[in-house]
Structure formats: C-alpha cells, structure tokens
Image (cartoon, rainbow over all chains, first blue to last red; front, top):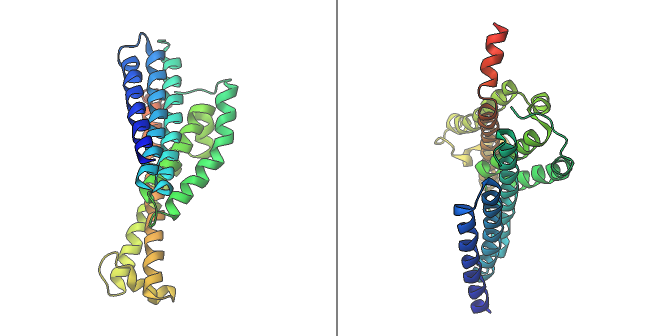
Length: 88
Length: 154
C-alpha cells in the first residue's frame, strides 16, 4: 500500500514539473498565475499523501488546510494586482 | 489603492470563507502545543482573513473595520501580554517565562499553570503577529496614496 502512495506522489511531482514549465515560460501573466495555482493544489495533494505514508494524517491535514487557504488568497491577490496594473 | 469592485464571485467567497478562517485560526492558536501551529501561525491565518477582506471589499471598507491606529494598538497589546506574563513569572520568583510559578496566582497545579501560561503567551503572539502582518499589507498596498493624502492635508 505504501508503494502505491509513493508511486502516486512521484507521479504528482512529475506533474508539478509540467506546471512549473508553464509558470516559467508561459506566454503572458495569466498563464503563469494559473500555473502557480495548479502547483499549489498539487503540493497540497502531495502533502496529504506524505501524511498517509508517515501515518500522521491528522498532523498533515492541518498544514494542508492552511496551504490551500494561502494558495487561494495568493491567487486572488495576484489577480487583483494584474487588474490594477492592466498588464494581462 | 484597492477600490471596492463588483466581483460577485470574490465577494461571496470572501463572505462565506471569513468565519471559517477565523475559527480555524483560533483552533491553530489553541492547539499550538499538541499539533502543528502556534501563536505565529494562527496570527498569520488571522491576518490572511483580513487581507482577503481588504482585497475583496476594498481598503476603504477594511479601514472602517480596522484602521492602522487600531492595528498598532492591538500589536502593542499582544507584546504587552507576552512580556507581562514573562515578567509576572519573574516577580513570582522564577525565571523569565517560567510558567510553573503562575500556579500561585491561578490557584491550579504547576502542570496546569504551565499549559495555561503557554496558551496566554501564544494568544499575545497571535495578536501581535496579526496586527503587524495587517499593517505591512496595508502599508504596501497604500504606498504613494498616503503621501498624497499628507500633502493635501497639509
């Protein structure tokens, strides 16, 4: 069962690299913002899988909830900033 | 300066999320000694709630709820709670932040006094961190704006 979750988390890391490419080279600011937001969501899932692997899921749920909250607020702040400067 | 906008999605989400953010921040502060978190992390989550209010409803609306002056007072109160509990332990004959000595004042066993003392210190840290984070956000987002206000005021 642990092997299954390990393979799953390695696959998620590969997906994070794909999103990182979009966040680095993506044309325009909006592609980058979407890439960063997707990386945050994947990091959250990787955190939860780590919690299952280490058998401390109660600890990791606390951290992942804060991560999701800050990811959402960060994306909204970035969107507001793009709206204000008008560079999309 | 962020002005009030007509974003229905962001405004509704902020209104729905705000109470959960506050309750979760209080949970992080209260359970700081047996789960991840503590005063600093809880204060940052509380400040994140106010940042969400500021970017969804505009800084003018936020200033009515909590102005820079109130934030300064709250941060001072937080530092005062922290230093006050430490100094109280010093007065009662222990070291600085030696919570066990608080058992004389609180009329509980020293172990319970340690738990309560850590909780009090964490509440102080959370208040200070929340107010300072909010002030930093406010100053960054109103840069330039306040200068113009000063010039026109004088």
